[in-house]
Length: 235
Ligand SMILES: [Zn+2]
Image (spheres, rainbow, N blue to C red):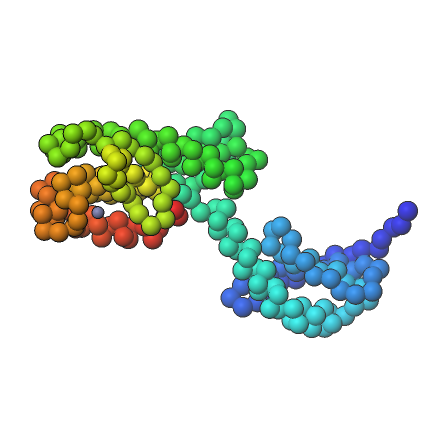
């Protein structure tokens, strides 16, 4: 059994645009050792009898490493804290006192012990279920305007897509991006109407544009909003 002599000291050091708290423990050891704690502070172990000047020199020598670590720490933190978009509203993650997953108008509630991956996967499942209902209702609402152009209403498929918001297949499917659930309803509607217009016009020519204008007079403005919004969300 060994006992370890240990003394702790703290000081704050300016580093780049950042300030970093350094917790120094003097121990019976031969060399200095630097690590970042979970809280983003620096844990520095030094041999007994080291001067403050030696400590500062050592820290300065490892400034680049520290800056990198801090940058990663901040990024990770931002990911943990920043909210998610649901129907065009940014909702924060909140810890549920009831220990359950729940989406309200004001927050996405999650059990305290869930990892970020667990949160995202539960939200994904929830969004998918909502999307199936909401996209279907939106298609049903617009169907009377398009019923003459097709024998049958296309079948909805909700997909995760990187490059498209929606598409209409010749085989009778309307594919809609899951990410539209993160957007305001007016933008989801824009994509649904756009795809339904392809039942009559396969290209984006003048006929297509006239039909779009007849359905949604402000469709061009909505397209600009869609572009702007797509930069806010992750998909
Ligand atoms: Zn198109």
